[in-house]
Length: 167
Length: 72
Image (tube, rainbow over all chains, first blue to last red; front, top):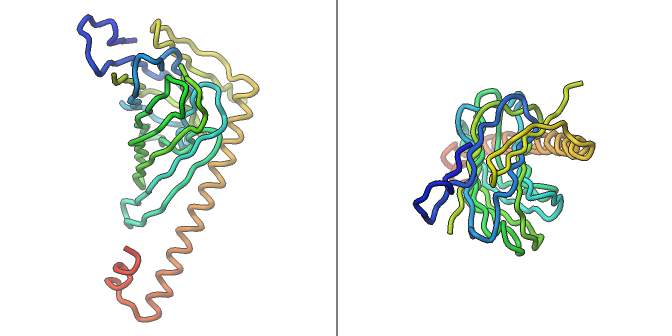
């Protein structure tokens, strides 16, 4: 695992975690990543990872299972049909997407490490049939240290999860 | 039955390990799967309704350009 915080040169944008997912895992939890040190965080799921079944990728803060609100705008590549989406539940359940060809999740979290509502901006869900931009809020005023990404079906193999902190 | 496993990554130490899903995690996953199926059904219904609506507009005599202007 590479941790840019080990690099001696300080910077306003720091790689806090970079982890290859491995084989056939049903969730990925990154612990001790949010703190009051950074105001904002960027999370990427990239690389040549796949999900064994077509699935949404959900993001949950700590162990909280309430108060997640996500609004998105989904456009299909083939038809340009647009759909407004909402996702209010036990996690940000449609934040990312995976199937046997891709894994895709990208978002920024504001104030995840301090005791206030966590804001989600620039959520991008890239699927093979459509793209979705989303924003949302977790309406629980708690400081979190961890997050978990879980597919709604299947298991994850490969790919790399990266978390950056912004000062 | 397939064993569900969680990957845990500690960003502070760089250590990672895998463990089996807890009963709560299995229950949460089942709820998420049910929600995903319901969400897909809802999206399919919306898509079907859109196709039906476009066909009815066309039957009324609207051109494709006029339909496009109407629905954005």
